[in-house]
Length: 377
Image (cartoon, rainbow, N blue to C red; front, side, top):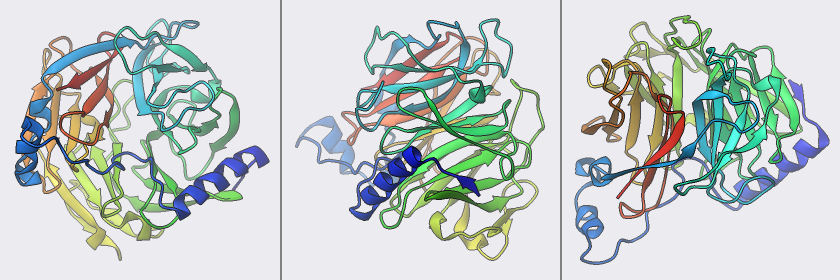
């Protein structure tokens, strides 16, 4: 167990208080509002969710701004999330990005976090440059904007304040080259963070309190033990409080897996069997294969939309194809979109905002251009 400093403990207590009254700022936590009667969104809303492609309605692709930090010039944006409130360096709705490479573009040597306002022409603000972030590949923000980062090369999980100060660095077992991170606020119960590891294919729940405790709730996800820049492992975490569902992307087996009632899964609850399509263990019934195979090809990132659909980003399509795949909760492929016709492997880090089809925005990091872009209606 890791001791939590007093100032972090206060933040954790605040998060727990929010949980008690049902506040939620996790990915996919916003419930859909009613669309304007007679509008295109209203007509779409009349259709069953499983038949509605939101991605098809996002017809505009716009550049928000560069993700290259202004001090160190670091590149290759991986982690991406949204600030739920205004605090410290963040305004509510700001986009928070971490860079995986240094200014020479050496894989896994980046250690900067930047923030951009969610509008075209935004300039990156350097929030943190802690060496504990070395090889930062995923980010999650708590309900108070506290930053949790998965740092592959540093092999740790730093917790950083909204002004960029390192508050506590979680390291050692069960962290084994972190590769995924998400904040999860169930509809009932306390908030937690989930983290995945690229070295051993495990899924870890981090429980918040006076000390952090850890439950390795699933193991057996495929890993390729690739060097930075060629890593496939469980990643692309997305959370939907409706059903307490955690989605995990498997880039080695080209699968998407959902864990229902994930809060109830204890240590050792699920074992992912070879191939990534079947499960065993006392809580195997909580694990569900959503999609396997084409059009998934080396997926690493994902984002959950307001209606529960998932958008997954491929990294292993042929050159000239950087494909997003929209999937219904039942596993139906609803749409695909090529968002970059340059070199393959440009899609790292995705997040969606909005409560209707009309106001949905799907943000993503484009590693070919070292910038942040958005798909919108």
